[in-house]
Image (tube, rainbow, N blue to C red; front, top):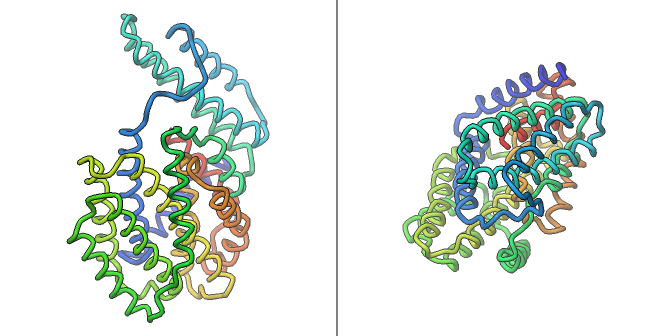
Length: 367
C-alpha cells in the first residue's frame, strides 16, 4: 500500500508536469474544454435525476444506519482480496450508499438527524480508506479500470432509453460522413468559422443542438487526421468557442428549450465519443512512429489517459456495446502505446505500472 501511495504522488507530479508543458496547445485545449463541459453536464445530471432506483429498502433510518456501519466494519477486516472481489465491494458500497443517505437525510422525525448524518459521513470516509487500501493491494490494468467503471455504472432511467437509442443511431451515422480534405491550416480556418457562426446564431432547440454536434464531429474527426502536427498551431480560440457553444446547449436546457434528458444523453455521448476517437487516433499515430519527441509524447500520454480519468460511471451506463468494445480495445493497446511513449518520457516503471490503480484511487476520492 505504501508503494501505491508513493507512486500516486509521483503519478500526480508526472501528470502535473505534462499539463505544465503545453500552455494553450491541443493538450490544454481538450483538457480545459472537456473539464468545463463535464462540470456543466454533472449539474444537469443532478437536476434531471429522479427518485433513487436502488433495490435496497429499509424499515427505518436506524436500520439504514446500522447496515452502513456494519458494512464498514466488515470491510475493515478484509485483506488481500482479488480485484474482482474489490469491485464487488465497491458496487455493494455504491448500492448501499444510494439507499442509506437519502432515507436518513429525509427523516424529519429524528431529533438527532444532524449528528447521525455527521457520523454517517465519517463512516463513509472510513469506507473510502478501506476501499483504497484494498485497491492498493491489487495490480490493476487499464482494462480492469474500464470493467470497474462499467460495473458501478448506475441504472439508466426508463425515460432515457428511447433517447439513448436515438443518440446511438445519430452518432453511428456520423461515421459515414467524409472528412475535410484540406490541409490543417484550411481545416482550422473552417473550424473557427463554423464555431463563430454557431455562437452567433445560438442553439435554441434540439434540432440546432444536433446540427452543432454533427458539424463539430465532422471537424473534430478531420482534425484527428492531423493530430501529430497539432502542437505547432494555436487553438486557444477553438477551445473557447467550443466551450461557449456547449454552454449554449446548457443555457437552452435551463430555459426549457431543450429537454434535460436530451442534453444529458447527447452531450455525454459526444464527450465519450470524442475521447475514445482521440485515444484511438493517438494509438494509431504511436504505432506509425509519428511521435518523435518528449513534448509530443507528453501530450499523447495525457490524451490516452483522458478516457480513464474523465469518462464517468454515468457515461458508461449510456454506452452502446460498440462503444464499450472501443473502450476495451483502447485498453488492450495501452501497454504498447505507453511503452513506446516512454522511450521519450523516461518515466519510472513503477509509475507506469500503477497508473490504472492511481487513477482508480482518484476516482474513489470523488465518490
